[in-house]
Image (cartoon, rainbow, N blue to C red):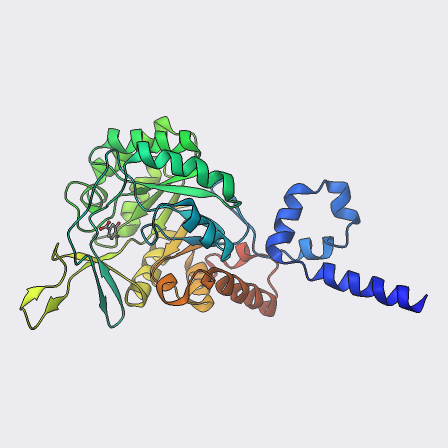
Length: 349
Ligand code: DHB
């Protein structure tokens, strides 16, 4: 009898150890009645990390940032297995592009500068990968889209959604490819046209990723939101360069590239803080996030979720789980029941 009790106790203990990720999924699949009866209810009540981001359900607020990893379903799955709450693909356009010649990446003391030149297989080819990725992923898949005109953004976005994308993120902020990226995001009239065109044709959430290389990123965000943006991603890389003192030449073949990593974190944080004061849609913080404390800073500044990119190069895909666990422990220690309670909290003091 005593042995049976011990066994049951052990079983209960193990069940209570269920991860928050699993608890979140459990919540989605259990009926209300079972939720109330199951011992997992304790854990469900304690799920502090699940969020609703412009209609997308994420098990936690960490996301893979665009541009950092390739286009295959295997890499996306690897990142989701590392604990990411959503995946954003590299930017895809209407036609295939081979990108710039090497060198395309260079390391600095505080981050990376890259100028790949938006290499991608084109949306027709990539659509197959989207559908296949959707079959193996249990977190939302967001396709990053670029174009050389408003209609092009809309066509690519439509094809991405038809292939299964849960949302699109408009790259209006690549700092160095001519006639796209920041050349669009820096011109309010063109930005408006791009967002309106995409919104008119796509029935899924539209995120707009902004460049810090503008006079007022909060005003740019307002322009995007007034045109229909469902969320703002801030920020893309900062236009930068490096020079080889021996050859006396710029290191990157394109000369200019985008700076990412710890160097841009304080800039990104300032941008999120300013945008939060101007618009009502969710903000996704991005730029130099390396650990849970960086992520918590972004949430406190007003971000509802965070994207991680460059830090994957040094810390590997498990960085998502490490950051999520750190945020959870922080919320618990501070007595918060949900991550939503700390979004924008730094504005209230
Ligand atoms: C590239 C695109 C970006 O949006 C960015 O921030 C940096 C580099 C590229 O493909 O070159």
